[in-house]
Image (tube, rainbow, N blue to C red; front, side, top):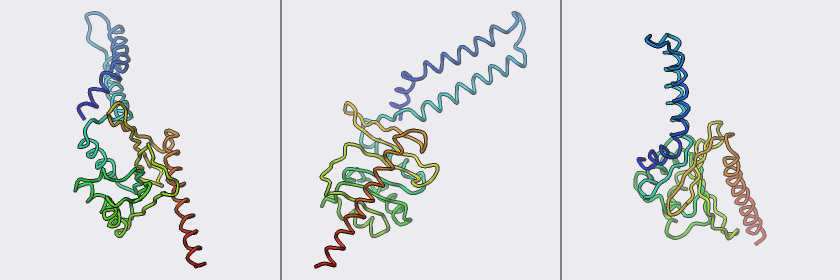
Amino acid sequence: MIYNLLHFFFKKLFASTASFASLIGLAVTLRTVGQTFTTFQQLLISGAIIFFLINIYLEYKDSPKIYRKEKDINEYMYSWISRGGRVAIFTRDMTWAKQENIKALLFNKAANNELAIYLPEVTPKISSFLDELESLGAELYQYPELDLVPESRFTIINKDRNDARVAVGRTVNGKHVIEEYDMGGHPVFFLANDITKAIYKHNKLMRGKENAEDAAS
């Protein structure tokens, strides 16, 4: 958290500060020497401060989150998944879900039919955990036939709602970088959503083939 704040400050804040200083400078220029600020000038300064603070918040909200430690990544994931609504997790192996609080959260999501997991295949290391999630109501989609190990990782919250968002994770120079995108705000969201739909269709197709083979045998 502190690292992200400092990173954001040095990378983004100076541009916002320049705009803020320009507005304050305008108000000072309009002030008559030897007199206090007029009501208009006070409103101008107050508006500049409010604009400055809102701009900082929006800049920070949309800036990439950078984490160095697994503990910090897990805290972010817990906070992200906790925001309510249906969750779709596109992952390599789910081994990151080690902490008890994250497991409890996922169990709760599964029990409320609010959890879908997409991964290459279920390995013995995580099979019992995923079996328990599935028994509670989680949807599990895997694609071993594609022989694909994804480099991307993302989690969609509030899936299939107008306020859906996606967090996309990647590794850059040994640091874990997470970027968030709103539905309609960036093509990345629709790409992620299309991937989940494609894997769902693939699973449906494979199950259809398995049923046909069982019926023929």
